[in-house]
Image (tube, rainbow, N blue to C red):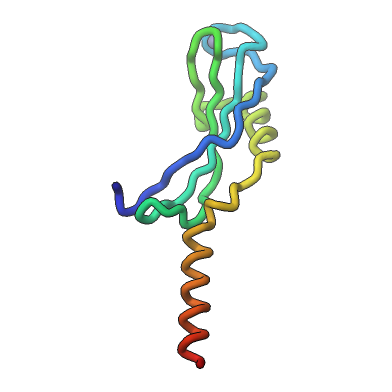
Length: 109
Ligand SMILES: [Zn+2]
């Protein structure tokens, strides 16, 4: 197990109407959106952004977010905007806050 790092979890897979830039077919693409988060000793600490890929089910090629252009990039932003950050990606921050509050409470007593 790594001590810390950035991990990603898949949020959504949505079919899109874009033309594949590799094989030029239409209606064969999916947009995959991932939530990235900081992990400390296997515990998610906080979210750090979303990324995504498009995948063509015909030619099996992927296009990473940084390589998306034009309408494909706009579709990525649209799909990304209606995905929500999972609450559990804040678990480490919530546990640290709870520990601080409990420590302050017991020191105050
Ligand atoms: Zn294709």
